[in-house]
Length: 269
Image 1 (cartoon, rainbow, N blue to C red):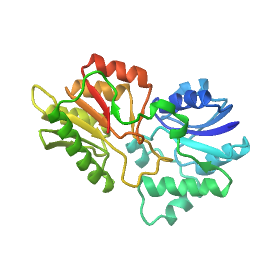
Image 2 (image 1 turned 120 degrees about the vertical axis):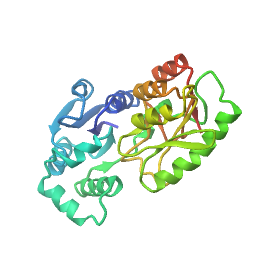
Image 3 (image 1 turned 135 degrees about the vertical axis):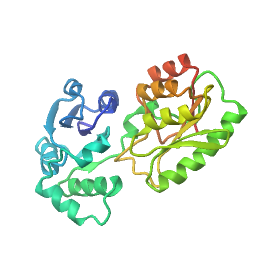
C-alpha cells in the first residue's frame, strides 16, 4: 500500500501502529492528530501530521482527500471526559450528530466512517497491519495458569462478554468465581486497580479483557500495553486474559517481558 491515513488518538498505539505499518509495506502515512490527546511523537513516524480539535470532521476528511488518501485506520482512543468538553464541532459533525438516534461510540464512529466513505476514504480494520501483536490462542508468558485460574478465566470471559454486549465496559476482574470489578467510564487501568484492591491482601485475581460480541474493529481494538502491566502489578493480579485474534499487545516483546518480571500470566483465550 502506497499511502495510508492514520486517525491518531491518545496513547502509544498510533506510534506502534505506524511503525508496524511501515514494516508491512506502507510507504507513506498521513496522520490526523488531536490537540491535547495525541502524543507529539506522532510527527516522527508520519510523513504529514495535521493537528485538529475534537469534532472537526470536515477538516479531518479534507486532510486525507487533499493528500490522496483513500484508505485510513483509527488507532488510539479519546479520553472519555474530553467527549463532553473542549469540543469544536464543525457543521458537518453537528449535522451528523443530529441524524443519530443513539449517541454511543459505535453509532458516532459508524457515522464518521460513513461520512469519510462519501468522500472516497475507506476506514479499515487495523489488525492485518499488526502482525504478531495480535496473539493467537495460548499462554504468552512462562508460567501456565493453575486450574482455579483457568476456571476464573472462563468465568470472567462469560461475564465480560455479557457486560460488553450492554456497551458498559470490556474488562472484568474476578476471583474464585466472584466478580470484583466491572469496567465503566474510568477505563481498563482503574478497573484493574479497583478489582485488585478488592481481592484481598494476597491478590491473585484474574483480569479478562474482551471485544464486544459484534465488535467493529475499525473503531477500536482491545489493547494491552505497559500501563496495563503496571496496573496489574499494583493490583497484585495473577492472570491477564485477552481474546485471541481480537486483541493487540502494544510492543509485545516488552509487555511479555514486564509480565514475566511481575510473575503475571498473560493468556490469549
